[in-house]
Image (cartoon, rainbow, N blue to C red; front, side):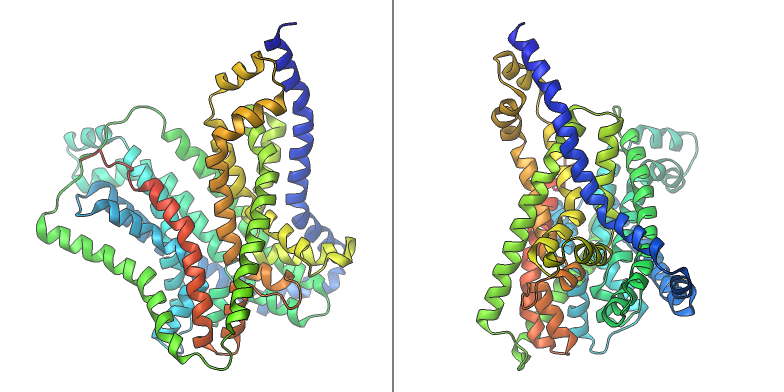
Length: 517
C-alpha cells in the first residue's frame, strides 16, 4: 500500500475518535438546557404553572419583549445608516470612522449604563435602557451590513434607475434587499443580547425576565420556579438564534458571484460635515461619555473603594479565569471545527449546531442550570472554579468554534495531502501542518472568549467561589450599595479589556471596500 493510501486510511480511521470527541463536546454544551428541561418537567405542575401565568411573570415578559423590539429597531436604524455612510460616502479619514464604528463593542452595556447615570443622576426607565442598549449593540448590525453593502451589485441598481426608477426607490427596492439578510441577522444578535442582558436593566431599575429570574433565585427556596422562568427566556433566545442562522445562510448565498461595486458619493463640504457630525454624535454618546463620566467619578470614591490589593486580586482573578476558560474552550472547539471544515456531514452538522446552543442561552440561564446540575451530580463543585469555567465554556464555545472552523477551512488541503503522502498520520499532519497554519484564527477565537469572560456578569455572580471577585463583580458590588465613585475604576478596567475584541473587529473591516471610489 502506498504512503498516500496509508495516510488517507489513517485519517479515516481517526475520524470516529474525533466524532466521539465532538459528540461529547456537543452533549456538554447542551447539558445545561437539557437539565433545565428535566428539572421543570419533574417539578410539581401545580407550583410551576401559577408562577409562569401570574401577572408579574407576564409583566416581566412583556417588558423584555418591548425592550428587545425597541432596541432591535433602534440598532437596525443606526447600524444600517452607519454602514451605508461608511460604504457609499466619501469621508475624510474613512478608515478612522470604521474603527470608531466598532469601538462601542469595548463598552459593556452595564458599564455604559453606569456611565450615563453619572451624567444624569437618577436615570432610570425603559427609554434610557433602550438608548444605552442601542448605542452598545449597533456595531452588531453595522459590521455585517457594511460588508453586505460592499458586496451588493450596483449594476442591478443602475439598471433599475435606467428603467425610470428614482435613486431612492431603486435603493429601497433593489439595493436594500441585497443587504437586508445581513442587517437582519445582525439585528437578531442585538435582540439576543437585549433579551439576555442583566446588568443594564438592573442598574436602570427596569424589571425584565433576567432581573426577575435572578430575584426569584436569590429569594426563593424552590429553584424549579427559577428554572421554569429561565426556560421562557431560553425559548425566546433560541427563536432568535434560529432566525439569525437562517438569515446568515441566506446572506452567504446572496454573496456569491461577481458584482459591480458602487461608486462612493461625495456630498460636498456641507453634506460631508453633516454626515461626519452624525457619526461623531453617535461615537461620543457611545464611547466618550461613559468613560469620561467614570473618570469624573474617581475623585468621589468613598469608603467602599476597593483597596489596591483587592483590585489587583480581582484583576488577576479575572485574567486567570479568562485564560483558563479560553484554553478549555479552544481545546473543546478544535475537534468540532476540524470535522466541520474537513469532514462535513449530517452528524458533524448536528454536533456543530448543538455547540451553538450556548449562543442562545443567556448567562443567567446557564448559571441556573449549572447550579442545579452541580448540586445534583457533584455538590463539591458548587461555587468552585470548575462550574464557573464550565459555564464560560458553554456560553462562549460558539466564538471559538466559528473562528477555528474558518481558520482550518483556510488551510489548503493539498498541504495536508503532501504530508500524508510522506507517511505522516492524522495527528502528526494536524500538529505539523494544519494547526500551525490555522493558529492565528484559533488564537483569535481564544482572544474573543477571553474578552467575553472578563465582562460576563450574571454567570459569575451566581457561580463564583465564595470570597472570589472579578472586575465585573467588583463593579456590581460597589453599584449595588450606591458607591458609584468606587465602581468607576473597575468599570474603566473593563472598558480597557473590551478594547481588545473591538480593535480586532475594527482591523478586520477597516479596509473593506476601500478600493471603491
